[in-house]
Picture 1 (spheres, rainbow, N blue to C red):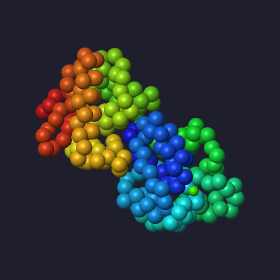
Picture 2: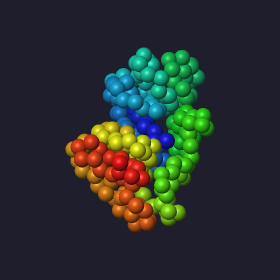
Picture 3: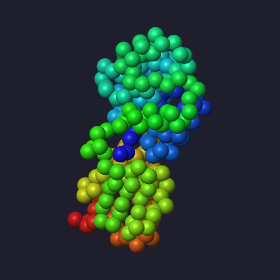
Length: 226
Ligand code: CA
């Protein structure tokens, strides 16, 4: 499942390290560098998870949790340098779901993220299939006619999104909102380029064209255009 995560962290090296670590696991990641921005983004976007630093400029982590909880139930994983249990308890009371003390291993963070996002098995299938195209959600890999497709991370995310909405026309705006982070320029041709590359790779693996363009309306992944 395509998951969108918000990181609120003012230490830019940690923030970048987390972002790239999560992106390599095919999460879509937005970044906020202070409490105010974090609180705003968390309340105005549909994230699946928020990773929130305790000490933040402009507004501290506890205030951010309070504000988010007035409007949303998004799981919150809190980062802290302090082992003081009373602080953690306070954060839990306000609505934090989990804690991680710095310094931590990326692996531990990824497992906590995975645990917080865990869904009942019926909700989460491991494979998506359309025609001869097969997407493995645990391996983040795709095959067409049994041949592996060598996809970039973004191409994979885009393909996953289109496959989850197979048979529907998805607008450019919706696709970009779900597959790219907020730094994506909505007027750039990045989406078109990714669609072209996906089509080319699917074709090279011997498949027919499954991604159809509807000018002015968007894209649809289906075995037939209509
Ligand atoms: Ca900090």
